[in-house]
Image 1 (cartoon, rainbow, N blue to C red):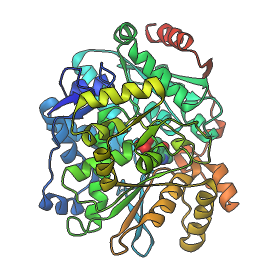
Image 2 (cartoon, protein in one colour):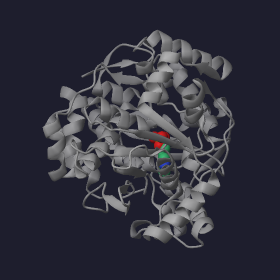
Image 3 (cartoon, rainbow, N blue to C red):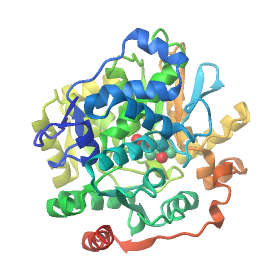
Length: 464
Ligand SMILES: *Cc1c(COP(=O)(O)O)cnc(C)c1O
């Protein structure tokens, strides 16, 4: 399987090279040359197979002969071995026709573990085979950072620098990162917001000499391997509910659009998802795009759902390529416009295509908190605020009540104790593996939102 850049100016690569590259050298994102397919019989068979087996099966189609199948199977098995539910990504019924897809059974309690546990092991596998060392640089709005750190901690092949916006992640989120004191992990609190952190990372990648000297790589959701791993639970949950005969709709709390795009990929592979709902908080760039055809950066608002406080949804570039007739020149022009003026317009035809594939809804904080309260009262289930954003949006836009609705539950409520307290006056105890989190020592450095200073910090520690 070969991959090309959304901007069309980078050489085609195989999976292992795409994994290590993260962002393409022309600033674009890698996408597979074509979508592999899954037959209806295969989809039906997923219902009776272990999660790790299905994951290996689906990922093998994207990896091709880049990694031997037996090695991949061992990596995937190891990645999910420590998850605390035997179903890995179990469904839980919320109400008639409504299901929560629990994606918080990994080591850091967010859905990001589902991809990053695999990606960390894939990296280590490829780097060791090539006798290489690399520098991971990533920006996090909260959950990516800890999931990435857990995925690469203590690996000799990698040094990792994770930037988070100072004071804009929860205590639990920060501690999940900063209490990992492994030698190869460096936490940086940037005096700015998440988009500032993401811009710093993009600029470091934009400096070719710096990038090559340090062998920079990304593990944030622009890395194709992450999207690939997230495709799996769309298939497993749909099969559990009767696919291919009965395929559920999905509502996805969305920030960088990696998770929702993975659902789109599942569709392209043959899973006939009848409705995909993009659920955002006040930071609603994608919902505004659906309404107006204009993709325009807005100010970032801090909310009770910090992991989706994002006003530039990086993975949208992958969808844009498809919407614009797979013409990378158009993508390049549009993204250039975004950099120049903070916005671009998609063509009317592209907008029509997007509306045929996605619905979108921006959810207020009051709706989010009210939903957490209501779900707890009605079903006895405490959901995290991001999940609640999905539930509100899904219920508002659910087109066909005969179709089951699956809400992606992207985090465990214990990650967001303030929202839980505000919504329910209750507490969400941390699972056993994190029970002593607040007693563990922290290590991190605070840096200004200043590219030169951040680069100097990274350079001094990556090469020593
Ligand atoms: C990262 C994250 C999201 C958003 O996922 P994207 O792939 O960036 O759209 C939603 N919920 C939680 C809890 C997250 O950590």
